[in-house]
Amino acid sequence: MKVTKAIFPVAGLGTRFLPATKANPKEMMPIVDKPLIQYAVEDAIAAGITELIFVTSSSKRAIEDHFDSNFELESNLLERGKFDLLEIVRSILPNGVSCAYVRQKSPRGLGHAVLCAQQLISNEPFAVVLADDLIDGGKKTCLQQMMDVFQETQSSVIAVEKILPLASKKYGIVDVIPTQNRLMPIRGIVEKPHPDQAPSNFGVVGRYILTPAIFPLLQNTTVGSNNEIQLTDAIAALLTTESINALQFSGIRYDCGSKLDYLRATIAYALKHPELATDFSLLLREFAECIV
Ligand code: G1P
Image (cartoon, rainbow, N blue to C red; front, top):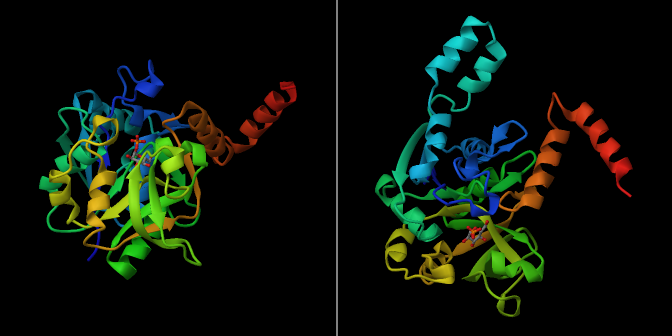
């Protein structure tokens, strides 16, 4: 089966970036000149996703506006002959890609957010993309790499990367059967374990391809870590009936939920930005010289 739908859980409050996120969604924070959510959407579209499902909350209207057309802006750019900018604005959502929005009324966790989108997914596999995790996959986006695996296996796939053992409390951690390559069958998964209890040092990053069998399990998932309904717990339940693989994807992941990694992402993307790369690297050198 082909995967054409992706869920983007964007209802979170973004408290780690207050006050910037008081009135603006954290997913709209830019890396250079593009909001985080657009990078996440581009990852999905490159992987063949054509239906974007955003699980939002009342303060996230800016996300809807970003993926909608803006008549006033477009006619203004047209009148002034700013065709390059017009193209940038118009190509945010390519032809053939549609958006749907569903509200998560209260912040009850990632598992609950995914469950909110159930009505928009029929009996088909789907992707889940967390915009906080900005991934530069190089030639193939992270979700493209995962899609290749799904086409071969028709089983759920979860993106993982090696993390520092002490960071296990920030991630879902998988227990895998080691292999000679980057694809490893999962035999267990646990949400944010204490380092002493972590089954490996492979942390889940925000890209999943899941079979629809996850939904009834999510309905039966009770609150877990952080008093929230965790996707990780439903995935652990899915493992009793289906095989699931972890993919150690190729590429660099930036945790844009953390201020330091957000800055690292900004530097990395500015250094490869067509208009800024040269001047920005000079600027960085100037700064580096001042640091003793
Ligand atoms: C969520 C998931 C966690 C995963 C992480 C990746 O946690 O629950 O399993 O490792 O995303 O970013 P959150 O960062 O929302 O607390």
